[in-house]
Image 1 (cartoon, helix red, strand yellow):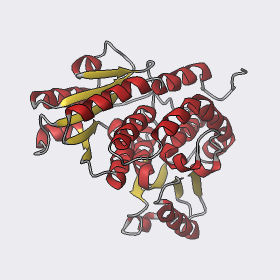
Image 2 (cartoon, rainbow, N blue to C red):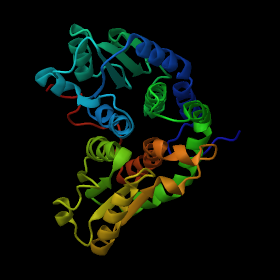
Image 3 (spheres, rainbow, N blue to C red):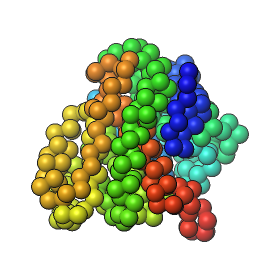
Image 4 (cartoon, rainbow, N blue to C red):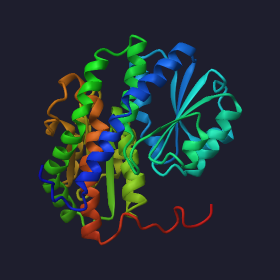
Length: 338
């Protein structure tokens, strides 16, 4: 198999990381089945920054599909504010690329002091987070995002509760993700390069998304454009766009629309139509544009955060190139004490 020649894209590593996440399926199923057998009252999805935002699609999935209480929580806020429903009959999931995130480590300790069963997804078995949780599920180092693992966990759990149909077929289809996502990256490359070239000097972007893409919208705005590129952004849920934020639009405002394939698509379509009436610089990144061969139509919407993470990963690399601003450069994050 010939490797791609995409900017800053290590296909071998990308494939290995994606495959390693999908390969956790037997372990994830064993954990879910054990939790179900033992019984638990609620599920907390706990993160910090990007790992918090990346939990939102799975809170959203549970909210619309299940009667199980599932809540995405900011680690640092949980420690300070607490939660009256968090206790010995709770389960908490954490994700961390490095396995060293301080807020998450403190939240794990907070949970364990209250008898909560803690589960961690990371790429480093000897990391502090892997060592701290009750159950560590380890992929290849630096595997991101955690959507593969979270999709397997949540759909297995909902399936066992009779709240998700076709789990076995869906989980089987995830085996094609290494191929599918490489194809997504290849298809996205020209548009990613063109967007970066057109916006090399743009210092403000307005981002909109909804449904299971709202978390990614928040993440890309804050963790990539702001943290990694030091750009100013506004981010707004497509359902909330018409309640204030639309007043910021001008003719030259760069509007980035993230469009998925779930039931909230019409909300984002409405924003796109309006934005194009005002701004001459509206860019739509739509998961529907990608074939995703081997994925059944009824499952495509679930993969939207993962698909757009791949697409926008190409945009990020090209922004790094045209702006001559490394994605690894920080002024404050993990540089200064706070």
